[in-house]
Length: 271
Ligand SMILES: Nc1ncnc2c1ncn2[C@@H]1O[C@H](COP(=O)(O)OP(=O)(O)OP(=O)(O)O)[C@@H](O)[C@H]1O
Ligand SMILES: [Mg+2]
Image (cartoon, rainbow, N blue to C red; front, side):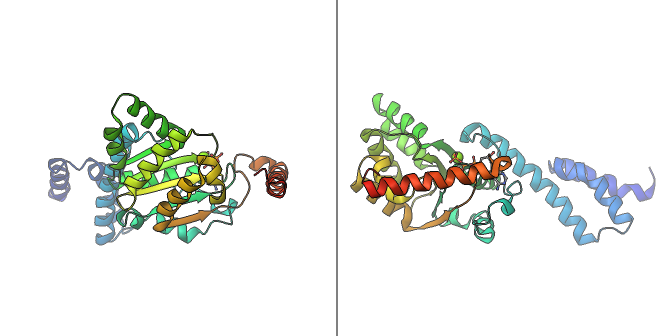
């Protein structure tokens, strides 16, 4: 073994001893870059530690994928802001720094189908899971079903406690499917428990003025909105569906038609 190889071997042994496989895998490449003058010492240390943090975060995410019920991995990096100009990039990037989770604030993403509400809600949950925070994902219907099942078997309190525990809960798809009054009451209890206790990220295709109809009870919806909005970041997305991006004109036409339908319903009082 030549004298020049010794420190390198020692570093490898230390990284193995410290159980830092991410850094261990990256070390040879980093040291070669240092030898050829491409990296300074501080850059090399930054990369070495960064490689381990990346591996740890990905492992955390993989573990969280099992328990959090996240339907997919969506990230901020995959999000094309150019496609959705109504979104304030700085607001979304700042949310992904997760100060709102520490402060137990909420996020509400509103907008028509396909504009990226679930994508951004999931990417916030992914970012939190990578930081080691406990996250949980459900559509409104799924969450209510699980509360109803728990209620039927006398486990409601336990289930409410379990769902209050995650630092970040995503409640996706508020507004697509009708819910029963009993279901709305259960959801209200969940939001009341989480209020000022942990963050909730909610997505809806319906504006708040329509939540009374969604929950079948104007008074309860108002109390729900009051709790959600008290410490809340609102992201109102106005734009075309990403799913329909290859059919831009058709998508615009459908959006115009749905806005017109809503206005007609308001005028005739059937909204
Ligand atoms: N700006 C974007 N950049 C990249 N991918 C996007 C963007 N917007 C949406 N997508 C992708 O398009 C698909 C639809 O987006 P998403 O599910 O987030 O829409 P949504 O607003 O939740 O719609 P819905 O109300 O129908 O649930 C997803 O696969 C998502 O990852
Ligand atoms: Mg969605």
